Structure formats: structure tokens, C-alpha cells
Length: 82
Image (cartoon, rainbow, N blue to C red; front, side, top):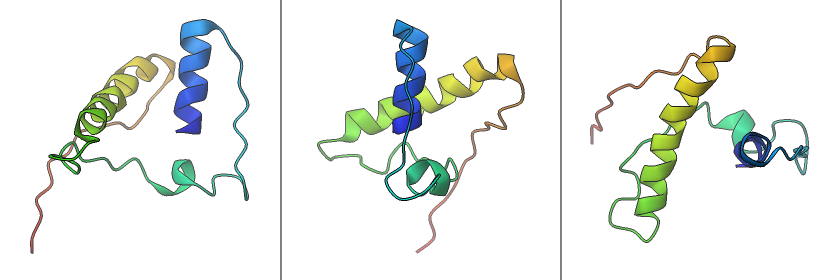
């Protein structure tokens, strides 16, 4: 969330921001998530709309940042097996 917030502050408002992790560099979500998102994880919950928008923004950022070099963004289809 911190990296995303800093990016949008700079892009949309020209505000420079420094992201500081509480414990160590990349100790939180930015360093651990690996970029894996699922659009339907929170379907039916109070955060469903936010989850869908976040998923869409992830794809948009992949395209937008491609102008600066390879982003390795790709959309994959996954299936759950129980």
C-alpha cells in the first residue's frame, strides 16, 4: 500500500514521498506478496468493490509502467482445488 500511495501522490499531485517500513526494508506486503492478486477473494464482503478496483489498478499499472521497461505483469487464470 505504501509504494502504491507514494506512486499516485507523485503521479497525480507531484508530491514526493518516502516509504519507510516499520521493521526492515521490504518487510511488509511490498516485499512479501509477490504480486499475486485474485479479483474474487472478497466477493460478498464489505470490501468487495475495493478488491475489484485494486485488481483493475494492478493491471493498469502494469501497462502504464511498461513504458519505463519490462514490468513482468501478466494475468493468469488459476483454479482452486479442494
